[in-house]
Amino acid sequence: MEKPGQASWMILRSSGSRRGLTIVSMSSVATDAATYIPAAPILLPEGPWQEVVGGVTAANGFKAAGVYAGLRAQGQKPDLALVTCDVDAIAAGAFTTNVVAAAPVVYCKKALEISKTARAVLINAGQANAATGEAGYQDVIECASSLAEILHLKPEEILIESTGVIGHRIKKKALLDSLPKLVDSLSPAVEGADSAAVAITTTDLVRKSVAIEAKVGEAYVRLGGMAKGSGMIHPNMATMLGVVTTDAVVDSDVWGKMVQVSVSRSFNQITVDGDTSTNDTVIALASGLSGAARISNFSSPEAAQLQSCLDAVMQGLAKSIAWDGEGATCLIEVSVVGANNEAEAAKIARSVASSSLVKAAVYGRDPNWGRIACAAGYAGIPFHSNELRISLGDILLMDGGQPLPFDRAAASSYLRKAGDVHGTVDVHISIGNGPGSGQAWGCDLSYDYVKINAEYTT
Image (cartoon, rainbow, N blue to C red):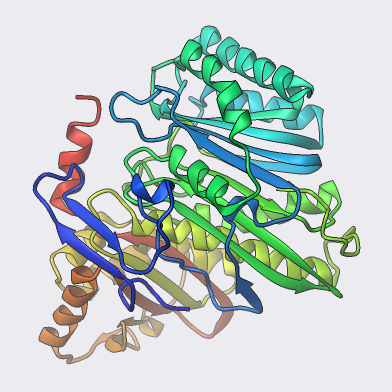
């Protein structure tokens, strides 16, 4: 799998851009969605799957749309998205751990407690509808009920996601007036998926969408998804929204476990700035229309295959979010091996990826391995410091707990080249001989991040 910066992306700096960057896709096919925002690089891990087009509509039974509803403070980029399933889809969700949870988060949790299935996910950009009290919650109920009436569904079959400014209620009249147009725009084609992926973005520079096809058991299934996120990104969900779809046939309890595992390996392993949002939501829907055999045992070989596919889709989307971090010039991928188990390795990787000092050093093209060692050490996972090994790309900086002589100019050049093409900086850490391994993803911390967030509501 190509990493960003290897083939088809060009980053241009522009003082007129709010993010200070202009992204030009050199290989994407032009669509209506692309006129607003280009596609993110595809960052799927290697595996026994094939990338396919279609995003959130790649799996059988799904349609999507994105339209402009006048919800954004400025511009006419689509800001209202809808994903629907032709049948009752097995539904599972993962949500923010922030106790100031937004109204749509509270609503979705209640809906999924009532029903194991869902038929549609409605997503708005512009207003987070968080910290809006009972009035904000009633807005969610009214939006779900109005859409359900148009689609001839029950309100509890509609799930809601919102993103935007905290403390702002949904522009309800504009949203409700746009629902008929939104439903009429639904399409199973890639254009529907792309327009929906655009509509959920806020400060994102790119739309995030991916889909794969893989053999699970004796049949082929498809999985796809879309996500948004660029700032207020930190583990235990990031400030992100996501919808993942599949046509696999899977029992509700098995699907729920799979979603939690994949989220822990993906969206809970990315960080941009250390802030955990009020609105984080990932909804995963399984239509069961692939014709494959039913997966009813979480420990079965078929379940393991589907889990790997779901991990791949969610990790691909999560890495795109970190790559698109506000003000970022590169993706940072931290890989840890030698831990006692996956959870311990993941925690150390997350600690390093979250370190502001590590992120600032990468932006400054400073191969300061001491900051990496420090962040690994305070992760709360015990290990012997004399077994610590750190590499930056292919450049070994520390081994056996001891600093090594290395070409500082070459290491700095490695960081600089990654930043010049918005590529990937690989940090490799070994803490012993255990079987546990894990990864986390972040981005560098630039001056532009402060500028963007200092002016967010002004």
